View 1 (cartoon, rainbow, N blue to C red):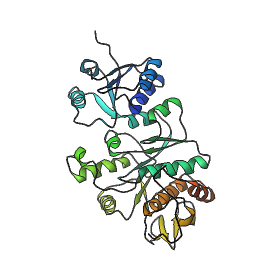
View 2: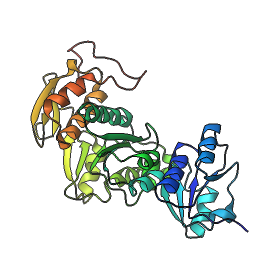
View 3: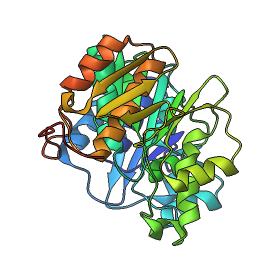
Length: 324
């Protein structure tokens, strides 16, 4: 007789194993991990230690069809046979981020975009950490959100989200949602339709209320056009590379100017460790977010200056003469 499990984690990598640990340790569910490929030895050892059943190099449909919930790793496409099978059997399918967030009381800062989201995520996390905030880092960076929720719940989580992750999120609620930019990417996963990809990115705003915040790049015509078309509940805060004091953060006379919700301040480009227009954008997002969290401007400024970025990607400004 086939053993029944309440929850199936599809994928035996960090995302799937983290979800399985959360399911077993915190939610007390019977859980099974299924991977169509090979599971690495360290994850197999971890699952064995936690007494979680698993399989590799196959998906056992007779086990999967009896589950109440499937937690899907983001790398598994919606047209994969196992996903089609689950839908045919009316099994609920969500992503690891969704599953973890629904098990957590933390507040979420969520970042997505075609470019710059990793640096922005790490910069925000750095400022909050340096300011003494109890904060976790998850998504496409660090360990899985599910693993962290199973072990601890900080006040805030900073989460980098890909469009693939957003596609399997339905009830996730970001207190602060950020879209850095949108350019055509991964269109093969979206029927080669740019609008489908845009819709995926804007899923980050679902479930937001007027008490939440949406930060976006005012210079990005794709985002600006979509904002005009959509009914957005959250408070909208914008940043720009132009000298435009109608935005929450803007650039003027080699300085970033913050017209913040709680405080106003400025800082010279030369005081940042990172160069390039894209990093001015990342800095503006980080500063706006830190203000929402009510970090004092002196701590924001100092933390922004001490951030050195993603290893092997970024380097310091060479002079004050870098143009926008």
